[in-house]
Image (cartoon, rainbow over all chains, first blue to last red):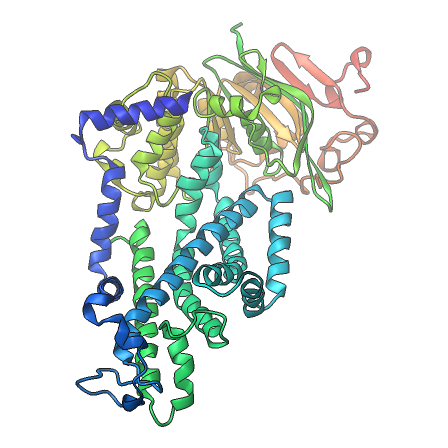
Length: 304
Length: 330
């Protein structure tokens, strides 16, 4: 009953309009204001936005065909005005491949990180908050998953269900969940022991409120940093699977796979390695900068 | 006499882990009348906080076991309540002020929203956001903090201010019972006095009953109507403030406590502390719990638990005062 009462109160407030500045509405602005002061985070945000724009408007920038059409006459050409990033061993335009590869790579990186965070975060928080049997069951399953090397686990999933983008995402997510569960559990355990949790209980807070308003926000720092870092790892994992032929199927371009292929021409045509490498680096770096900035912006203690 | 708001009867709590069993509270009984203040004094580890947490139903579920007894609040047994019912009581009917204001506030929520939280949780009469915000302002002003500071975070407040915020949270819903667990231990002396004076004033204004847990006898003398002296999980002496501070007869432990505080009128070179340490709560002595440290220990003390000697409102649990015909083998 008190719940509906609160909800009604909120509605009434919404109807009355935002006469008074209330904390909940200003929180996002507040975080954004602090984030704007952080130069590194803003640089990260700009780079990442550019990457996303490139991914979204890939077809406008350069036609997909350039990236998959084999042109025997133009094999392994160094960067030039015609081929900005040069061509690979099949005469495909590397610029087109990097641009179109961003679609696949960014999808893999972001999607798997977020799913892994959602699943791992929930399991880790449940394990830490409820403890006891729930903790034991979840953590033992995670132990079993950790026993199998990540790449082998992904291989097994793909071998069983077939190689396509969807299965690739599932495979990479599964192998990264145990790490997230561990991290979230450890962080949440630290927060649950704090006295303010007990204080909140002493004035009647429910489990859901404790988890969403007290535990998660206080445990967010390390989790955000870990998630942004894991985006780069996920791209690399996908690349590894593509390399052994179980990830993205050629000729579809993908940064990791391009990196793997370029290995053969490392000494003669190093540009093949540099451009997709830089692309992965920029994606990872920008997300790390954003993650760091976000963590600082979310912590009121660092407010100046 | 007034109606009892809270009655604790023969409460027994132990903490059980794989390694050992800690007998934290062993048969504690006390009662609190409406509008009065009960002081619970005792050393660290005497079971004061455990008793308080039991009243709120906040004992750690995995290790703490309530072995017996009743806690009657407004006539109904708290121990028999469901979790949901307990949640509705907490904050609204009974609330607690914690010992350390530095860690008892959520560092990432503004103080205003933390005060609003209790109000939102117990919002039975559909107060709107504005009304809650107004109530937050009032509560803050009530504890002497300007309302415009409600948008600030706990780390922007000093220790004494944080304790005021804690008090504001605890009093936001105007509870019937306020449990203050060593509310001034973490504060320096001048702030202690301020905070206590403010608590006293608010308590009388809102006619809240209060349990004040402390180990400072001075605070007890100034603020409390009734006093329980706890030792090793038992109430060894209880009565009104006059009984404890003025009456002639005392438990030797209480005498020891008074001997450990400086006296302005008598001149003495040194304080006389109580020799020895609290008994190990995993291995309590069979007879009187205080017997190993008691300067007036008799043979019977080591073997038998003492009965209760009663003189009006004053109760002492000690063999010294046991009348031969009333001696019980409890």
